[in-house]
Every structure is written in C-alpha cells, then in structure tokens.
Image (cartoon, one colour):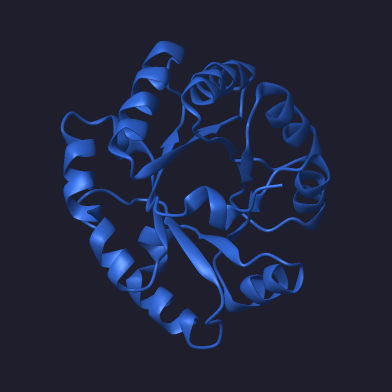
Length: 197
C-alpha cells in the first residue's frame, strides 16, 4: 500500500474540487496534473460528488496519477470513495473510526487537526501527515509553533489558501497546501505554480 508520503512526494499542491461539475472537474484535474506539482482531491458530500470523484479517478488512472476523496467523515463514505476509485482519503477532523476504515480499505488517510491535542492523538494513532484546518484561521505562526513539539509531523495547510498565501505557509513549515475554491479562478493555477516552484 502506498503512503501519504508517496502520494505527496514532490507534490506541494493538493487541488480540492468541491461542487465542481463533472467535465470541469476532469478538466481542472488534468490541468493540475500537467503542472507536475499537484494531486487532486474531490470532496464527496453528495451522491453527485461521488460520481464526479469516479470520473476524475478514471482520468487519474489513465495518466498514472492519484485522486483522493475529501471531506470523508464516515465509514460509509470511505467505502464510497474506494468504490469510486479514490487512492487516498482526507477528513476535516480526526475520527479514529474513519481513519481505521480507510486503513482497512487500503487507502492512506490525512486527518484534519486544529490543536496540539488533536495532533498528538493523530500521531499516537500512526498518522504523520495531517491536514491543518482551517489554515486561514490558524495562520502560518501556528505551523511554526507546532513544528517544535511535533518535528516528525508533516502538515497540509488547507482552508482559505490561494496563490497569494501558499508560499507563506510553505515557508512556515507546511509540506503542502490544499487549495479549494481558488483553484478554479482564471489564471490561479499558473500563479500557484509560480508560487510553489
């Protein structure tokens, strides 16, 4: 089974597609993969979104790329993600049941954290890659301070990130940034590539 480290090796961008129409999601995913700097995550809060994940995951397989399922908050969603072809799962928080379901399914999992207590619990459960969420509220200083007590943790800063702030989070210690609504803005992907290269 691959690991989160394998999936994000050399990929500092996680493009998060939320509520995106299927054809547009596939187009955006291909654009992200073309940069060589990113992986794609499709959030699966609705049945339509699971169908979008399936389409993007199929495109990923054709290219030898990875596509994850995001906002996974139940074991049922883990099963839906697996059936749709996801190769990893991401959650807004740390739920041991969801993490265990992902592990059982063979899907690397990135749980979300916002406090030292959550980070410590996730680390004790074997997770060394965590989603810092919501990043825009916590800020880059949170990352710098968390790296002190948790030097072995790797964070994907997510929530309110765009091309203007991505480099600041990486400089503060993020291993990658998750970019959601901004990813579909005209010219934003080019600006992100410039910021992350």
